[in-house]
Image 1: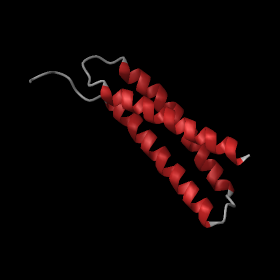
Image 2 (image 1 turned 45 degrees about the vertical axis):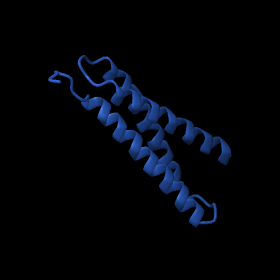
Image 3 (image 1 turned 90 degrees about the horizontal axis):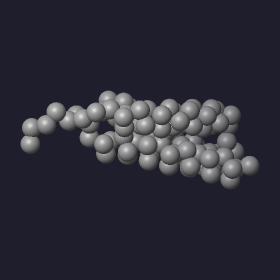
Length: 97
């Protein structure tokens, strides 16, 4: 009942990076669809930021998994979300070529 376990700050930061990347992804997709499929150059910048944020999130997730006395579901969820985001961004880039 009373434990010294805590939520990893780095793991939670990794989840925030994944969610921000997902928001950017869906925003870029919606804005591109409103422009009849013609994406502006800024959408590519959003994609680049998203990939960089996800790579940083994966690294932060793995670092937070090495911390002691934490709830491990937070870093595991963060790594999974970031890897899923990377996969979606990569598929979108390849599909768009």
